[in-house]
Image (cartoon, rainbow, N blue to C red; front, top):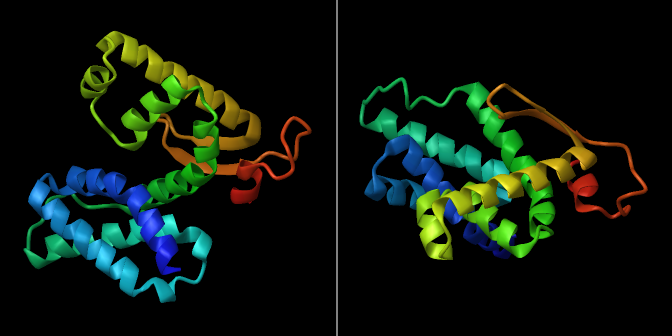
Length: 191
């Protein structure tokens, strides 16, 4: 299990760092909180009952560490509170991300790269455009096209309910379709 945790941690580290920094807006504090999360995840891994919920569990620990930090400094800021509704949205999004990853990997390389950098690693699009040596508007189009391709494929495989902001409210795999193989990752991991 520890090797699996290290592998998942390496995959999630940038996303967690961006998530925490979005809440605390302090890069040094973010590093401390992410480090504390890693230590808790690693030391408490034996308490995880459902190993397939590892990503959601890591996010829950991360949210708790953020909340604990603000409790410890006796600082109250309503914009920092993480409400139950937000927790459920993040949980659903991270669970769905597990079955969406193979779909992302199947995208043509230029769309896959743009989508991962923009939406998974949360790198600003202007920086991505410079990195890929394309125009900013060209990158925006590429990311939009990748999102459309991803959405189309996911809608063929899963019923996904979203709110007006596009946040995931619920999802479930569609009944088996001959178009997709029985060992389709989405149908397996979303069940």
